[in-house]
Length: 167
Image (cartoon, rainbow, N blue to C red; front, side, top):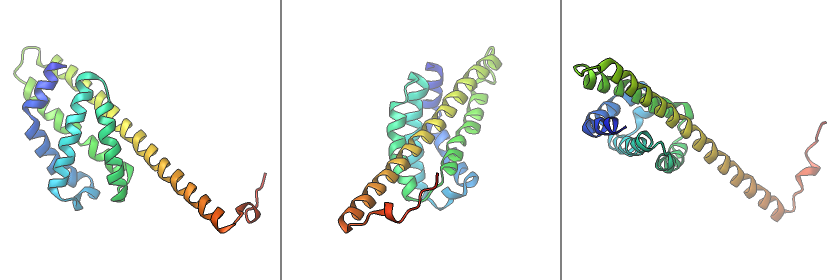
């Protein structure tokens, strides 16, 4: 894990730069986003992802994803667009790992082991975001339903009289 952490730290600027270039090309929804905003988002994600990679704990990742879910939902991003953006990390890391282990003794085995860990945590990251995004949208729906119920009570409307239930 420490080797991967060091590799991420040493290649941080390269990874961020490649993702800032790649994400808008691969995911059209991000093409309209200002580059500085995208770069900041990628940097925060990479920091949280590194915690997951090193510690196997996703607390900081979920904290970031809670923020990201609110922002991207407000920007009308689709869940699939955000997931595609997160998955752009894999080809970037594949190249970083190939470069790092190309000349190493037992490089192929080290590359395979590192790539397996990166893939697992990247997929875990995408799944965590899907969970967080779904939870956020469900909470928004619940809030809206509570608001509608309160409005109906204030107006004295009993919707059960207007809705036909079929069994």
